Length: 260
Picture 1 (cartoon, rainbow, N blue to C red):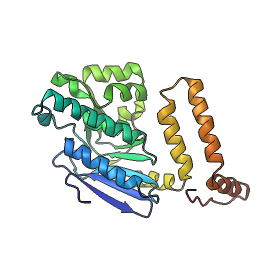
Picture 2 (cartoon, rainbow, N blue to C red):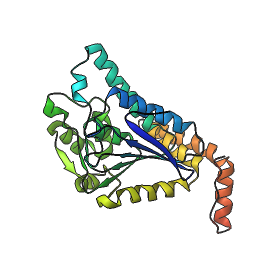
Picture 3 (cartoon, helix red, strand yellow):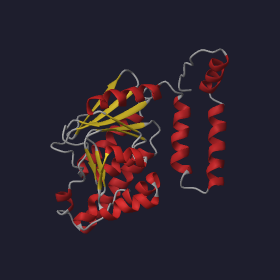
Picture 4 (cartoon, rainbow, N blue to C red):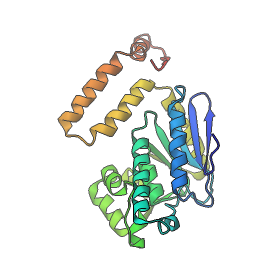
């Protein structure tokens, strides 16, 4: 499938790379959201893919935000549909059965920040900038920012960023737990791929179960979340990969997981 606003590549037999490519700053519009969803569906259908890397072709930004001009050109009914489209896509990303790593190389604002929040891991360069500046335009986040940001970094600081529209640098984002790692700009791609390679060597069924249990369980009361965890544990423990992992541990060798 040919895409207009992104590129999709499969590398190394385990990695899917989605490169956002809507110059100049990858502003998110309905077409880009649709294409991103289609790319993820293609990736999900390929059993060999273990990890997804999401990056930007633009040296200027990861995603500078949503295409605000497009928002002003639609009816209230169409606007509601656009909001639901973004929310549905980011929910899909958060529940995706393979890890999605965002490699953030520059401004990651508004809808772009909301997209990054829906990824499982975020690696940022020193040039990265994060924020939900919608309030400065007289509006508010609509693609999950009011929900995911406070849950990720805590209600006090998350609410402050939402109310002020402040933009923070990569170092502060790291200190708040918004990103997993911060590296020099020239090391960003290498670091993201290194982490992807590490995850690809883990048991894929265990990875899938962890992602799904975290995504679902963190919205539940503790006891219900633990019940969900116990059921997932039993399923994973019964797999061939679990037997292989335990045998490899006892035999002091590296395991060879087969996704079954």
